[in-house]
Image (cartoon, rainbow, N blue to C red; front, side, top):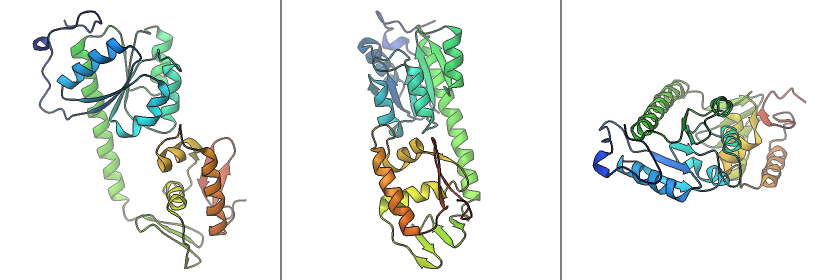
Length: 256
């Protein structure tokens, strides 16, 4: 068997061939060890994948939106990898494969319960690592296809109504009592995220991530300002409900 070691790596001819049916994956690699990271990047490149390597946990929240899969080491210099996983799961369902030297049962169980799709302990067999990446991405592709089918079936429901408020998500148009209300781009983006999940609580982190593209670095105060302006323009108290300590909900106009 071929194992990933960090002193001597197998010659390229010994590496398993990339299956023809596997599509290229944009891998985000969170690994602080330069030697390990360089070796993994080369292995993944030879398997047909493109890798962005980051050293710090905070960078995962910056680059996750442009990635198809996260390879996550738990021993990062700025924060524990499990905390990174918890923060990521608050805003994204990006597939995550934990790759770490931490092999105790408690860490494995916590990682999986926090939302890791797979958990591998170093040193890991090269063929197994590549196979696990392929398996996780296939499962995610199947899940996305199912979600797309469900969205297609619901495509007719692209106008959300609450009382006399109508939000046309595709046309980016809002009417209150039949009169069109002009919103800025950010105001409509915020409203669209909430209206698209009408009746469902949306966390501040998820709202920041979807509207600004980064829940970690976005200015939280900016969200408060835009929400205040949005509520003033809509003039419908109770339409956008604040859930203390969590986030917001596009709700019933009869709510206080």
